[in-house]
Image (tube, rainbow, N blue to C red; front, side):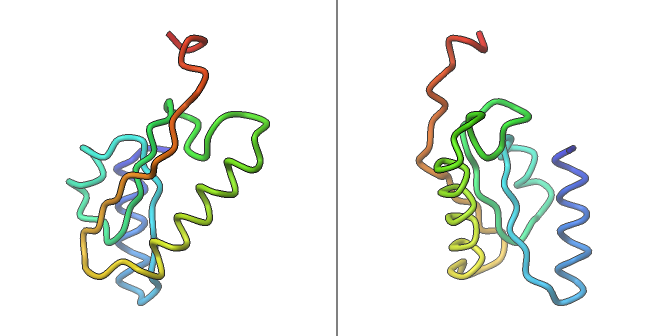
Length: 92
């Protein structure tokens, strides 16, 4: 999904009074969309929750996103999650 589209949808949901948190692979785009809360992961496009067939990794990313939703102290919060893609050689 397009990072800009996610930012627009997130903004509309927030204006309706529902807190949101986005997961982004391109923080330079997300930050310009003025989203309330976002977490950046260093994964290739199309894989925001991590490597295929690694449900433990997917769960950790999702749990961190929920934690961000609960703990963000102000608007425009962008954090970087510590996870890294282990299979970069297959993508280069």
